[in-house]
Image (cartoon, rainbow, N blue to C red; front, side, top):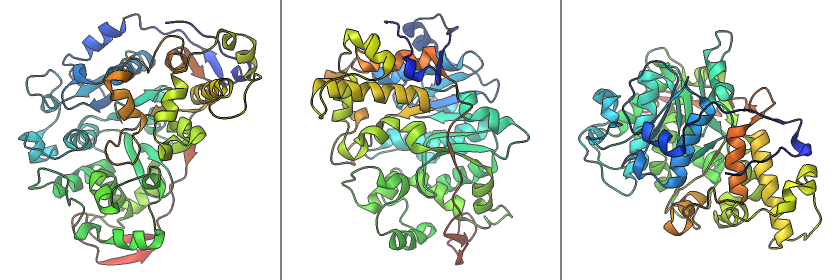
Length: 427
């Protein structure tokens, strides 16, 4: 891989660091395919249904770079649902914290892997602590700086970290907490309840526990927060079923009393470290609007070849003459360079989405999965190569991520965790 310098424009935002990891990608990947018993709460959990060696190559590179960025104090594990695998989820997790359909391997439907990952993320954090990251996340900032130092600080109010865009709807592609967290415990209990007797997600949120969703939808008229990010081609009900764990999180965060004196609404407003979606995990989408437009434009830009002079004066200044319209090579290269450097300077990580089959246009994750695009996530001479290099070799000078205050709910639910609301109260 080539080496790169920090442009003068970003010299006050980034600094060069030396990675202590000397193993090759292949050696690190092989280590991720070995059983590694839990020794602390410093765990990064991920999941791929068929195993880490069967992940798309670009996702494998993501996990390998997590190892390089976080160092030996953190253990990265990509669990799976293959009984003979060293990473089989039940080697690490108690069956009682997972739905029967996962334990018995009877799941069916189009999103087996996605919903198995939902089960794993809450169960793993509940039992062992640490952070969950989807395999589509390109890490930029060390996990300690993203949230873990704050979560472990006894003087900090933060106990759970995740990503938010808009209202109480979070993105569950990143969640972090110490083990036995009370909010995560109730989230996991609710998911277990929802999946009791089920083998797939169809209709999972069509029950009395989510009757308040009708009121929310009437107030909002259209999807809001994270649900408004993509050009969905499915109904809101289908979307809620797909995003059932996020719907469950929303319910826990609205409960005034979960039946045991625990107030999810109070916990939500006091103890959540909320990363602001756009700058912290979706900078390329913010700059290019790629979520609504699909991933093709982003793939085209970031896999363009960088011109030699862009490592010289133009890159040092962050400027350059050339075309001014989309489709002009000079304009496109400047756009691609801006996306990469803004991500390296201002993001915690970049979540590359799939949401396969749910949007009108394919997202970047689905495009990178395609065999014809193998290797475009790090092709030599491209902007993606620059991005990959920068995440490992550059460090942001800012103190920490851009956070959002937890928004006060417009209403709360007066009910136990597993019972329909007795009344709806306005906050």
